[in-house]
Length: 252
Image (cartoon, rainbow, N blue to C red; front, side, top):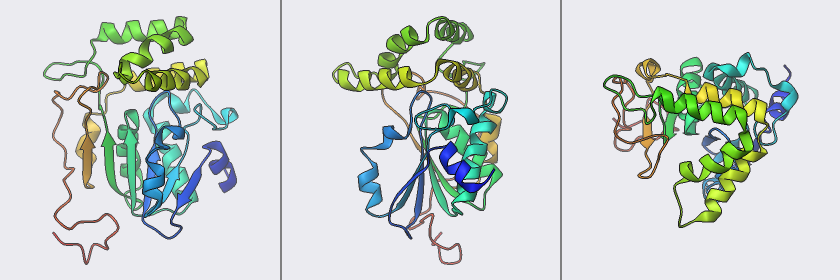
């Protein structure tokens, strides 16, 4: 696939300081790059900011969608890898919201020379409860959720989006998420939903070797804070560390 096809396929947007440190912002299920619009102006003052839409979301090229490719998170991670290669990005800080946090884990493992650090916003390596692990949903909950989504996607979107947003005092935010869900192609959304809610990336956390910041939501329903997962080699940044500081000069 030639470069322009990659950039068009994922509706890639680049803004900010042309030669600045690179931040890649990745949206979660049912959203697109528009979700970052309120933070981009602040980031763009100091960084080169790269935004994109996963295939099947936002302004991406729907003709590039493949159920086989996007039925696993590795398919979405490959999108990230190809965008990084096409733009020749390195020492990237990858910011992944929701399911994109695990996409970032997979992408960083695939191209460690390009992704220097991870920021996980409301992440979950597995959404279904397991022995000794709280994912937030029982297997029955997920079955019911997916059955409802497949039978009436628009109705599901209207019911679930407010629950996920969890901001009854800000109904405009709940409506925005509902609209975003409803704007997604139902067939592609069903595949992305199954890929998201049936994934189990707990074992992949052990492969994380870059400094990682985890941001949890006090209100999150799809990524509860109380959970147990396998230990990871991911480490917090040391004092004075910057993902864009050459290793030879970084303070430890």
